[in-house]
Amino acid sequence: MHIPDGVLPTAVCLGGYATAGAATWFSLRKISQKENPREGIPKASLLTAAFLVASWIHIPVPPASVHLVLNGLLGVVLGYYAFPAILIGLFFQAVMFQHGGLTTLGVNATVMGVPALLAYYLFRLRNIFGKDNRVGTGLFAFLAGAGGIGLAAVTVFVLLVTTIPAHMDVEAERASIYALTLAHIPVMIIEGVFTAVLALFLQRVKPELLEGDS
Amino acid sequence: MIIILFTLGLPAAVFGHGVEIDYQTTKAIEITATYDTGDPVSEGQVIIYAPDNPSTPWATGKCDEKGRFTFTPDPSKPGTWDVQVRKAGHGGMIHIPVGGDEVAAGGTGYTTPQIALMTASVIWGFIGTALFFSRRKG
Image (cartoon, rainbow over all chains, first blue to last red; front, top):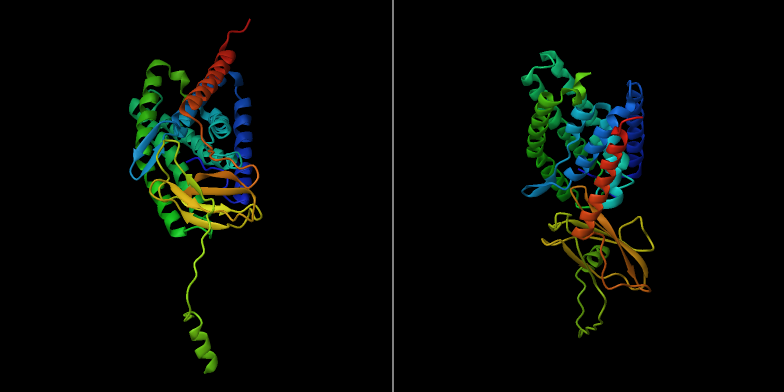
């Protein structure tokens, strides 16, 4: 999921920084319009730590091994704070753990952060069923959690498949990209269920923590 | 007709003479590529860049099932050789000095205790940030 340095062409890396810059601007603008923008920072900070740790949780899906991303979950719980949180989390992963890369930071932030924002919008649709409807909350939290990582996996797939350099064994690389993308289907289900369980728990004990209420 | 015969004859040039074989020992470099889970990058594609041309691959190849690949750098090109291993868009690059400041072995990863310490310090940073912004005013 985290694309490292030296894999994508320069133009794609620059494009990634442009989209990540636009998404950061949009998110910060929405945050600054809140009554108390500082209020959401503790929650965002703790979930950034969770995002960082999630990438160490590996799930073996033979023949591949994939890890949790939790971008959909961040979207559901953090709302507009999700994009900056993911950007900061990715920066630490790239600088300290060589997971991802600095040249691809913009691309990775776009690939994981924009689906997180879309997951937030999707989760807000639960209000159709009424705020206190547990079925609506569970269903849309599942869809947001699974959709967040699903959309990210599809975007990474498109980026990688369309930029395989000619000096590589293109067929072999394409086959391994297909395998890696398909391996994310079980992760979608896991993250969807995890997001639904967390959303239902928060709705019961501290409903104001769910950004979808606004 | 003569030209055609001559052309056909070229690829199968065989000489009716004795054969001499010389040998010399050279220094080869073995790389081992593993994911951060410890699993090998089996059959990962290897792209080697010589120091004099960092944009065009000097050679390409493929790791074995255990993520290993061996190559012999051209000794007439001293400097830093860049070797990239990638599979399914994931991978990394290692910079290997050849000639001059050579080192016997090197790597790009961290040990588990290093990773644990770094993770703990980063997480403490996030918790500290959360505590700072959630403190009561006044």
